[in-house]
Image (cartoon, rainbow, N blue to C red):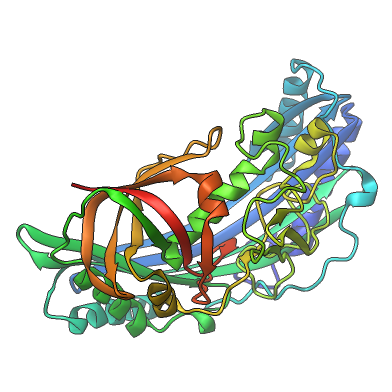
Length: 448
């Protein structure tokens, strides 16, 4: 098979036919329902370190995933072989698994009326037709900008340039078939400042659907360098209770903790500290969290989720009150609710920004800790307990005083969410969650 777009190995219509072949064979083999996902992708990445090309990697992948149902018994199998015999074998493997699986009344395809019917054009595919030598040159520019930014930059962990393109088709036995191509491009740099016993590392990166919207190579390198230099000569601070600002690049992790706590799997297993909080206040009344799956060129945009359910705009939190969970078909049925089209995760979750930039948040805080790095995984979603290693900057009189390191920050997510004082307008777009810096009224800082 060949594609009119020679960048892909298969035409989109070929992927559609492969999905249909899987559905047809599943029906003939006795499956009561089936869904199929067919995809292919390719790309390349290069890394330059200390002026030398360190890695050049090419990737080209393809695969078919098949989920079949024999009544309420479910089986799944996958293959990277697109031959007719391999497709038949994969369907048979999935059916054999289903026959030995216990029946589950919540298993099955979505209700037909929930499937996506009209799929808007989301502008997600922007090929970056750059040869390897051009990518290498960009990586050199990034790293050179980092070294040029300060004489204190003593080493490099590398500058990288990556471009990826893919296309997919999802189909099921209810008559749905849809898909589209996507692209994602990436620039990054990680450098080391200082020498001997006084060394610090930091990084910066930029990622977009359209390479024209990436940060400039020079700015990525310079930003990585300035962040590393700023961390030199870090100090420890005394243990105490202080306000804390989560800088925008890591503030998204708090949104991630929230999503985990109000996701179907944690809820139906009764393993979340936010169990039964629908319609209740979790955040201050100025907090608004929106899901916008149809943003043009959005990094997490999609007209339907992994189960082919139509995605839609919604307010997850409004006025600080939880308005909705994150559910797929199975977890929704377990909870006696309806899917929220979040099979596969959230779609462009946006924490509404406030009026202050980061400097404004520092002035508002007055005295406390600006966290720029988190270490470890000390988050307990069952209880909400939160304790992580951290590094950042001590703030006095609304201004950064000096870098700090070897500390921990601790609290409970319930209190952290309730004690959000302000949200910055320094919003950073890097993935499925978008937020500015977040100021929390008080946390325990463990130091000396």
